[in-house]
Structures are given as C-alpha cells and as structure tokens.
Length: 157
Image 1: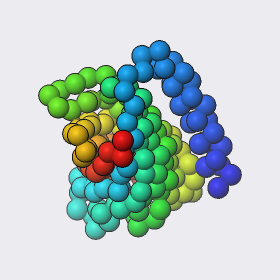
Image 2: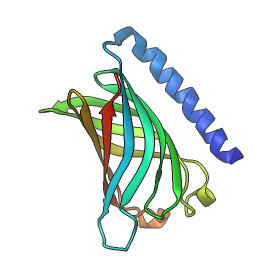
Image 3: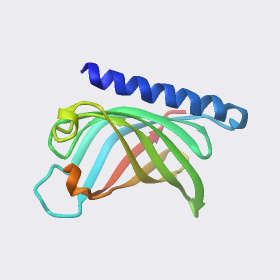
C-alpha cells in the first residue's frame, strides 16, 4: 500500500504541473461520473470483462481532463486509478489522444502495487452521456493481455 501511495504521489505532482500549465487556456469545466465499464480481450481467455466500479472525470478544457476511481478488473480484483487524459485531436464527435496515469490491482505488476500506465484513448461526450474507449496493448513480456476497454460516463455538471 505504501508503494501505491508513493506512485500516486508522483502522479499527483505530474498532474498538478500539467494543470497549472493548462489554466491559462481553461475553457468550460465539466464533472463526469463513471460506472466502470467493459473490456474485450484480444484472446478469449475467460477473463472478467464486466468491469464495474465508480469514478469521476473532471474536464479542464476541451483537450484535457483528469480522472480517478476504482473498478473490478479482468482478474476479478479491485483496481484503483488516477490519470490525465490529453486528447488534442478531434475526429468527428470524438476526442483522440492518450490517458497516462497510475493504477494498481494486477499481481504480475509490482505484486499488485501501483504502476504507471499509458494507453490510447478516444472520448465521446454528449449533453449528458459519454464514453471513453481505450486500447490496452498486448505486452506478453510484462504479463499484459491486450484488450479494448469501454468506460461509460454521465455528466454531473
């Protein structure tokens, strides 16, 4: 647990630096609440693909948001996460970029402790409903099984 908070602390310092740099371009802020989501692994390996949980995402400007929460991961264990989403590209109604942050709950990664992760992320945000769509790359040497992920979210304000 101590290691997780050390990693989270480093992530928070990074997040604060990013936020301070973004304040000069701050447009409209929004708070989204998510219910976890779903995953579809590249290989049918019997993993849990209903990853329910609870989290929040705060949009700082059109291309930048921060998020934190927890969900039941594909190993049926609890994962906590905190991340920054930077999405500078717009493709139709989608924002496209990457999510970079820290998470825990995977025994093959630092014995279940906190570790840094990054993945490509696309976001759709309507008036009250949204979704984050990501791709976890397949990295066998790290014990990472690739998957598509879908996180559903609802606008609080």
